[in-house]
Length: 181
Image (tube, rainbow, N blue to C red):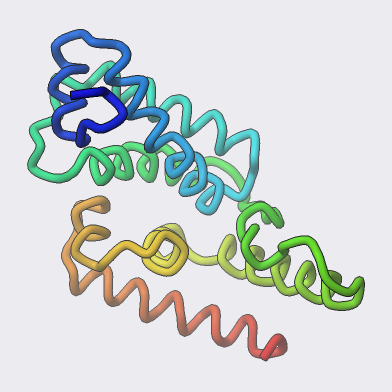
């Protein structure tokens, strides 16, 4: 089976056996997601790059600890989010238009582009101002599209706790962004 066609479980087994190409394929598949999640949590391009690289390196160094109880992607999310939340709690939150690149797409009329840019900036700032647990739940659920049970696995919490963080985060965002409706 070619490396590009192998599933993550097979690639992890090959990487655990020392095949660097197999881990390289895992990095190719999941590196962008690791960066995107880190960026949405820390709000800074350079910190997000560092966090994603550190997480991928930590995953390689601790690959022997991976037990396939969850998907490799979920396991990597755990590493990335733990490192990103450590960074968030050590520094002041920042906002970046990169957080919500989908909103601020180029093209169209200058007025529409300016409005999208302002909206993206307001949403990014509102998300950055959320408490870390709420920010993590919002980012993973609404921006990454993960179901609540995966988020519970990633955060080592329960599905009701995830639902609570989502509820509180949405409520705060609704209040904060009421002027943008």
